[in-house]
Image (cartoon, rainbow, N blue to C red; front, side, top):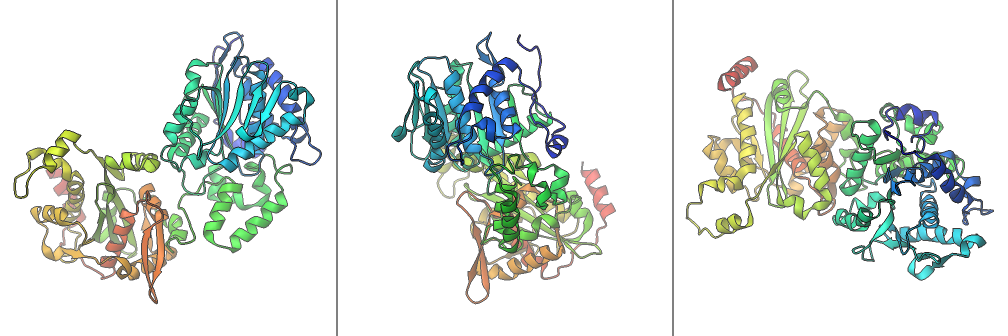
Length: 590
């Protein structure tokens, strides 16, 4: 009987995962689940000593997941009621072998003639990690060999009775377009998150389900070795929301092995006694002693290596990416966050003087603004940032589009829309000296946004009379024009030489972050930019900052160093206007 209603949420997951209980609901159709489990449990794992079956070697979490997948099939309607699944689990928990078992089981149960079953892997190596155990399962069972034929060089297993095929495809070398797969499994989704073409690729790979309602999609992944992005970030946010009950979608189900927030905050995940939380197969495919030893080694070594170990083997999400050549202050950035420093008003209220740094602004870049205030009393530096980006960035840098959308939702990034192609061409054809049309103002939307913020600070009387705004000298003519038009003076603008000349700010601000005499509001935008910084030596003692990759954006962080150069001069506010007077002035203006 078809269930009338069901839910795929698991709002008490934090309690369940610590207690070792199931993270998925019972199957909708128990008989279908049992039939699939009978097949799955009989498959042999050939690369394990003794070649045990899944039934002999696996923990219950595997069977819960398999039952949830195949137990969502309604035989009366020949329809999969829950058709998308996501398993997020730590490395070495037999994920690739589980993937092979699920797809071989699906191939055996599939009733559609000439159907295609697809495993999509990001690389050839990962594709082989799935196909090799799948082929071994068939070759180790004489009954399966009677009607299933592995074709090794094609990474294909053919069903001899109905002509269906299970294909394992490496996305880095084979064409996914034109696939009509009824069952799809996507391995290591975190790597697809780094591929700007991944969204289109996955759409092509899963498009066959539109005419095959009995099919399903299974996503498998460990955590990323950097902050999640792209399709991985989208899936992670979606399935977390479904699990938590904040998103209602009963057609999707996730089994996400993550530490509860309280255990992350207390660093309880570093206690070997808690390794089981994200390693449900511990004691089987995961050696707890090995994990404990490797954690100790990682803690002794480079901080970046520790972060990667935590993300891969304990499924702890990386926030600030800590690579080997990171900015020295990145190690301490997260702990310098001050959650009470959120808005521009917060900064103005707490500061006795404020300076600004501005960086970037190309069409393919962010225009970054960073304000640093010196806190009344404590004299700590308070950092607040905002950025603007033209819509073309979303097209040219699709691999970071989801990150940019996240910053827009946070309020730290503003998207500026470019005019359509015909209008842009007309604007480009205007000869020098000819007045542009009035609606050309749209092309300076980011500049206007920056100066609007600077005017708020000036109205509060917190800018110094001179050297208040630090500018990267490259490409600032339009910005300077707008500042002059709004009444800012030449004395208030300061060109900040870039490159190794920023060494004092780069090194000095790292020390202030470590000492927590620099505080920031924990903005996702600025934290992301800090993680994108790459620090390189220059000369005997100089350093420069660049970005880790072409798509990485660092403009607000670069603006922070420019502002730091000015704050290091110990400026004083030019206006003795009180905060009460400023607030009264703003209310009058409103």
